[in-house]
Image (tube, rainbow, N blue to C red; front, side):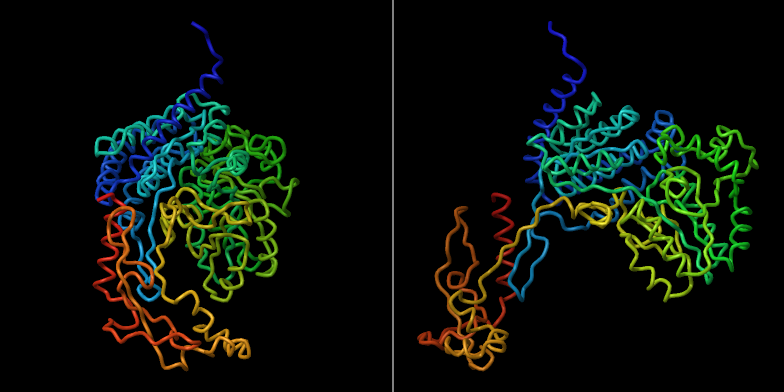
Length: 551
């Protein structure tokens, strides 16, 4: 029997996954709201029951973060997420505009590819599986090689739970032979219709370069400004809670703290009292030496590690209650490594004279994580207004970056994929949810006769009265006419009455002036007014939904 290279085997396996995923995507596309909800509830139950096991496996396999917080991440990505999205309209008719007579319909995008980072290897699977199936899509994952074992278990648990509740086989799959070649093959597979890319900048760039629609995120480098009116104790408590959550592995976590000269001493004292250790210049150099490689690229050996472990590895002595290492910085750029993203328990620290300097510094820091997140601690509403123009998609006020950015402590959508907008080269600036994984189409009823559009346009008459006069009507408002027409109901290819389209539905509309410009006045006939009748509209929607289901 011929032996194939591991990379070739992984490529063939990826192709097989894509083909099976396409079959599942075609099947689940016809599921009802009730069927999808039953599947999601089954997935949540299994995710919550296995949250601890998945967290323990993730920490053991990657060495990133801590079990306690990863358990909550798994809960956030399943039970908490479900409560947020369970009533979201992502299937069939999702909106009806009675005035404009437009029906909005959601359709699935098809097979989605999810790229999984090593920092959130199980919670990302739970989260992306939930939002994919909520939108009636199948999903195939590409795990990070450093976290393949725990990621693939999460994938299996979610797929088994979904299938047990009635989902198609292979609706949630993952690459078992984790290679760059397999990931690249999936990105370019014709069956894959969209990519949700969460990971390093290189992986996100590759997703956008695949030629497929992609939802990707950029790096974070969140500055946290403690303005002079802030409650310093609360601000420091929130920053510490955020930066220590899962040892700083969330990209929305604070990377630098900015205080003012007037509150510097209070801020420093508060950090020290809450577990912050201010390193000397020499100690900071030792930490940066092991923390970064090739300039400011962070070493994976210290991603998501506790402050005590980092200090020990760097050969510096810190108090036993140290939670975060803090290094004073006097600039931004390669000479100041702590001015870059650090997905671990280390912070840069800056002191400025006033909000003007804080503003300039924040913009400089955000250039290395542009479009992501910024924090402000203040009681001054004017400061909030001034900083709301910064190039970040999430401006968080008086809360922690981790919990605030992911929607845990704010009104933002609960999410683990946080868009950075065009600032950060991302196609979305929101927290990604099921609403981003649907195609939206609109059924629009004719409300003005095509040959009467100009005559019925008041704005055209306003700006071009001499031309409007040629059409025999300056505006329908002055015509004193609300003529309507109706005819026989048309039959669709599906064999049902299609009550859409002026002149064929028997539904009355306001159509502007039908008697000016030589049109004959229609015979008087009974109609229901200028807007579509509510009962008739309901009937229309029901017929359309039945048609889409093939009933």
